[in-house]
Image (cartoon, rainbow, N blue to C red; front, top):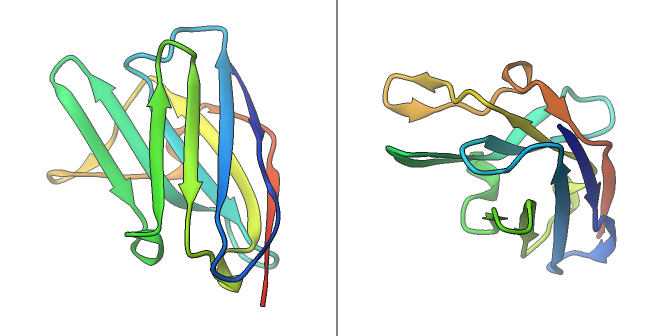
Length: 130
């Protein structure tokens, strides 16, 4: 499975960007997908993750992006998107898309931890100017 992220750029505070991730090598259906980010001097962190299986789907949003970021997937096109609205300077980071066949939970809640993902795309830089 190969992933190719794109769509990063420079945007003013309050602006919007849509990141895209093209997944190739395997149908996207039933893969867990995620967007992660790494800001300068910080560890990589999960932003949003999405699972899809025959029994249903799950979503995880990191608290700081709830209500502003939305993940979507187009299984027919093998594409994953991250719509980012109301961007803030603290959203500045390199963003990565990732995929894995497994979904992990803590109790009833889906987790979004980078170490659980086996397939990664290259990063795309997002810079939000103040």
